[in-house]
Amino acid sequence: MSTTSGVRARVRTLALDVKDMTAGLEPGEREAPGGVGLDALDGFGLVHLVLYIEEEFDLAVLERVGSADWATSDDIADFLVREFPELAGAPEGPDLP
Image 1 (tube, rainbow, N blue to C red):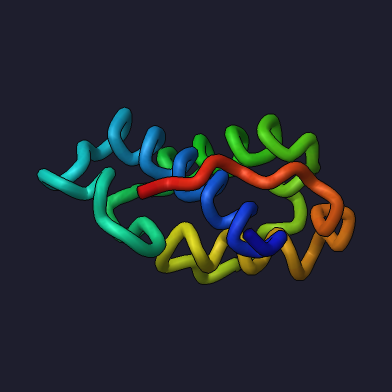
Image 2: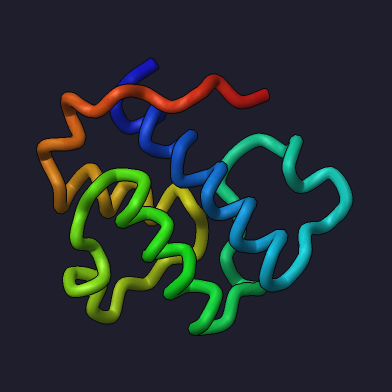
């Protein structure tokens, strides 16, 4: 698994958890492949997700977000890998179905 896919898996898990807590998940969404759609999250949900990401990766992300345009959890993961090169050595996330 590449660094990007490992970060994507970890961010996907966090996005699913936050979306489930704040907006609810569609049936089968947790099992669906690919990035998690973030359109159902309001500003509160997105801030929650960023705070979880900061804790998971031990990074200060919130101040670097600015006007980031994220449609999916994969967009966030790509942003993290681009903005934080130190993630290249981060442990990889779990293999998700």
